[in-house]
Each structure stands twice: as C-alpha cells, then as structure tokens.
Amino acid sequence: MEWIADDDVQSEKQHLALISQGVAFVAEGQGHGIVGFLNGEVTPDALHIWQMAVHHQQQGRGIGRHLIEAAQQHAVSTGIHALTLTTFRDVAWNEPYYQRLGHRTLGCESLDPPRCSSTV
Ligand SMILES: CC(C)(COP(=O)(O)OP(=O)(O)OC[C@H]1O[C@@H](n2cnc3c(N)ncnc32)[C@H](O)[C@@H]1OP(=O)(O)O)[C@@H](O)C(=O)NCCC(=O)NCCS
Image (spheres, rainbow, N blue to C red):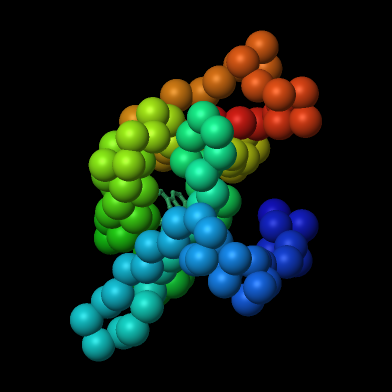
C-alpha cells in the first residue's frame, strides 16, 4: 500500500474549487474540530464523490457512513439520481464497505472507457 501512502492528497486549490463549485461536507467531533470530510462534483448524471477521509483516531465510528449519507441526502434533495465513486478492488474491505452503504459495482459496459477499472 506504499503507493497510496505516497500519493498526493487533494491540494488546497482542489478543496476550494469543490467547496465553491461542487459539494463538500465536513464532520466535526466534539472538542476535536474537523475530523473528516467528503467532497465531490455534480456531473450531468450523478453526484461523483472525489474524496472522503476520516482522521485515523476517529475511524470506525460511523463518521464515514454519515458523510456518505449526507451526500445521498443532498443528491436526493437536489434531484440527482445517482451517487458514484471509485475505490480499490485490491483493498479487501473497500468494495464491500461501499456496497453495504448501498452502492453497486458497475461493469465496464456501463462506464466511459477511461473510467473502466475498479469502479463502484
Ligand atoms: C474509508 C474511511 C473514509 C471510512 O471512514 P470511517 O469513519 O472509518 O467509516 P465508518 O466508521 O462508517 O465505517 C468503517 C467501515 O470501514 C471498514 N474499515 C475501515 N478501515 C478499515 C481497515 N483499515 N481495515 C478493515 N476495515 C476497515 C470497517 O470494516 C467498517 O465497516 P462496517 O462498519 O460496515 O463493518 C476512513 O476509514 C479513512 O479515511 N480511511 C483512510 C483513507 C482510506 O483508506 N480511504 C479509502 C477510500 S476508497
């Protein structure tokens, strides 16, 4: 998993662009400040989640699930019919986690060619 650990995080510029033009939700922990975020972009056919992360000391407490639910509620309330994201097939818990939250894995035939790998 070194390549993920070494991967760049979203830049401040990317965060600001999604806050102003896309969607961004934060989770605030009592006395801990912001402990997680989810951001994404509204595409012609979906709200696409670009990134979600929860502070490592706060993981496993349902914060990620609540962030996804906030994105789902936003999509429903603004008439967006789909919530999409991509994840890693080779991280054992990733795909099942998003499936438990209501996502289904799309096959290549339903994706644009550039997005045709490891997509939920
Ligand atoms: C992925 C992430 C945003 C989820 O946020 P969270 O607040 O921990 O999520 P929740 O508490 O709602 O759910 C945790 C679920 O993920 C699974 N999970 C999270 N991290 C895990 C790990 N390291 N190993 C195994 N399972 C893990 C748990 O099984 C749990 O599933 P369940 O509650 O349905 O049984 C958060 O763990 C994170 O920031 N991880 C580091 C970044 C990362 O791995 N991102 C991958 C994005 S595809």
